[in-house]
Length: 94
Image 1: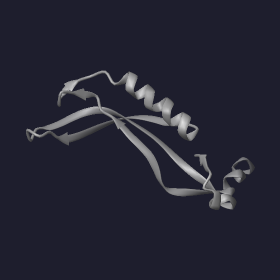
Image 2: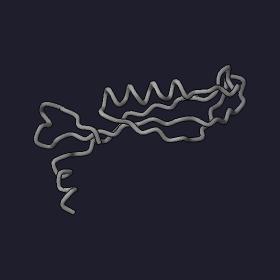
Image 3: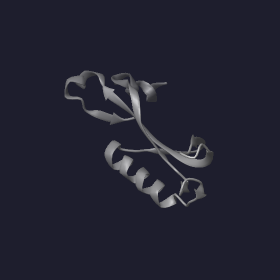
Image 4: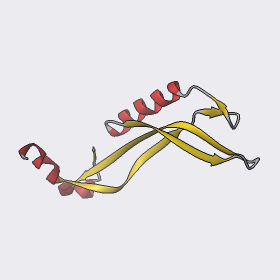
């Protein structure tokens, strides 16, 4: 596919930037995380040229020993490097 030939000049990094935005407060009380999620999406777009937000379910163990299960938002941004420009370390959005 000719449209994808441009990707040949990029090399994928082994990592990406990720952030989980919790949806609980005071350990296990539901909280609205929409404002924080939007802030992170916008900041990632400013820093990396774009971002993706995916809903997820996660769990963690509170200090009390209780397992807290919550809905969360997973925001991430993968990066590519231009093969011919690795010395300059200029990142390009994925």
